[in-house]
Image (cartoon, rainbow over all chains, first blue to last red; front, side):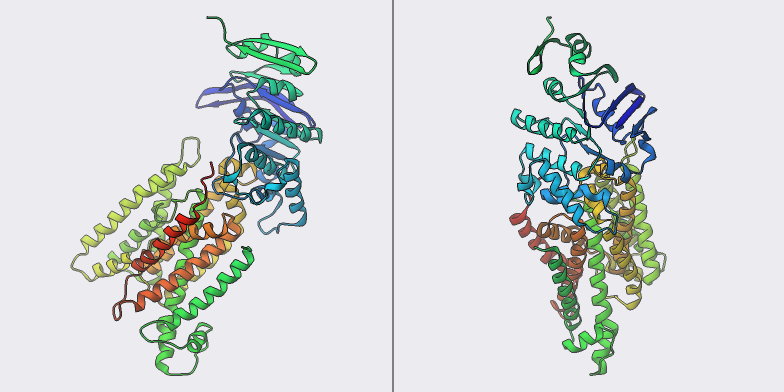
Length: 256
Length: 334
């Protein structure tokens, strides 16, 4: 479980996060939604321990993130950045192997169990058939899965994703989201920043709606993604329909 | 290719190259003598040949191997460090700083296998420290682009400093000494230089092999590396320190020999892929092998004169590299 308590942060004096409190329990998917610049990515960077809050704290299973060594953190927390890339053209297998680094010492050999973890990660993301392909030959959807597999090879308890569906077509968006839902169902705590409100509504158990570094609504999608809340955060009009298959959200420009 | 087989092959090739390096030269040494010399037995045969092997050929061939080994290691690290194919001891200004440092030592009237490496390391470290300072952004991170730009700028400055030292010492015995040394070569090799190079090369290789996995993690960027449990800034500092020490000691022992540090790691990466656990030892061995053959050629190509080593490395290495680049250029990961 990840908990943020009153997290505040400023870049060069300009506040980016202002007293953000939320929790991500095991087995759930928390969606961070909000307009560009509302603090989604900065919040994720706090949840991952990359940034240290100026006020407040982040806890991973009740331990302050910053009391853990980077290696300890990496064994418990998997992160996929937005539009991830590698500086060298690794094969998929070599890339996913990197996920075992936090479990291997400097002298540690790559053991059977490490290999098994890599195979599991590849299977979970449905790319077992791509092991020998260089990254440069993958499609956008395959690449996103490969980097998700790196995080899964770490065998974490929590997963943080920044825009896991950006630049993907509808098919691949749904495939990735189904994989993520399966991971949460298997007990991972998942938090993701996501622009697509309909995907957030369909897959998240809870939603944090951010606006100017504050959470303006927090709870299940039906309670948070309301026209009133959404038009507080975004400069648009919203129609929200509740159907048998869940919420359907339509954004329209405000009348001039 | 199986990494283990490749490393075994390179090790054998290194051994063959060392023996061949001892054999080749103005005076031909039979392979038995060469092999005996390599393993420290003072083999029989004519005393003349024994002296050549012991005092001239052997230290030179071993030093050449270790210089190529170290420059190539240094280049591998710096490319991996900034996951930037442009990085090398030369591009980052380390070699220019080391050259200026060593030239300064000579201009002050010192020299030899202790003062030169110290001067070179001081020069190289000053450049690295400056480049590092300049390339740090306000948030405390290091900008790879800033590092390379600052490295090129400071490299130019320190090359000018070496030229200035040449200018000041004009008409002096020291001029030819500095000049010889800026061209690069192994003709002054001795057991004493080897004593400076060997521990540095060995320690550098061990350290880099130990952190090779973390070097792989760094390919995912600083943040990607952090999420894999690697503290990127600390690792970078260690790697820069080791890379600087390797390159400046090599420069101190053999002058400025370009190309090996930039290209050998590339060639090995094109052939073996980017995994540093294999790449680090492979590039080191290949750099050593390459320099042994280049130096052998330098000794015999224009007899009785000796070609400057830098000319040979460029003439043979560049076309080969361009050929590999044209045929095996990897797709740009986007």
